Image 1 (tube, one colour):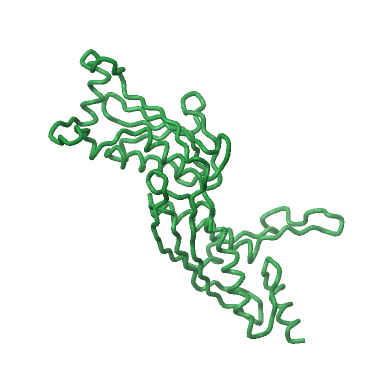
Image 2: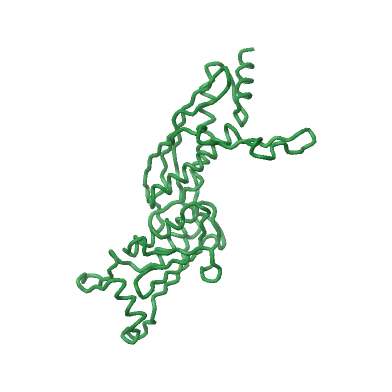
Length: 296
């Protein structure tokens, strides 16, 4: 279970400004930021879907303090819920780039036609309607989290002569609400799972008797590579949240389930030898010590 998109104070709100230029192209200035987890794609996709325009016509701008609105931070798996919710709230409801009168679908104009009117012919706008198409919105969830959840299953082999662990299969089924982009979700799951694998099998800070760190480079502090990771298999379940779009966060789910799944798989693989594993990392040396202790 992962509580996502919670927070307090300024953390329960997020900003988005949508600007539509005279040609009908869309610019989103978002308060959230991308840490390399594809928020450029997610915010553009959410905005394009809600406006009914092509995703290629949406430009997303993050982190420009001269233009982007105030944003809280990236963390706590909040960006899809807050950033996506703010973008949806700032967007006008359309269908395939066309705005129509509710109940009279024949009375319609394209977004490009409306943008042209708003910028190029402001004198034709109804009284009280300002020229241009800029919409600013600050979105809040009220502070309560959304709950993502997942099941992790890992199988492995342990060589009792060397203590080397080989991961055979790793399966994750995750429910992060309405799925915006499966590739992004699977990429974030993979990153978390690999981090969990590294924590169980490899990563360890070592200090000498005087408290000096001895694992000071990546020659000593080991990180998982492709050869340490099984091919990851994914399942997706979609239980929409009660937030706009039905989104939930999911950025840390892979790292929550992976350590327990991997550790338990290794422990199960040596259980018939009566070896007891209690400490991470499960290095070949520690596994051999546990097997030797069990055999007397």
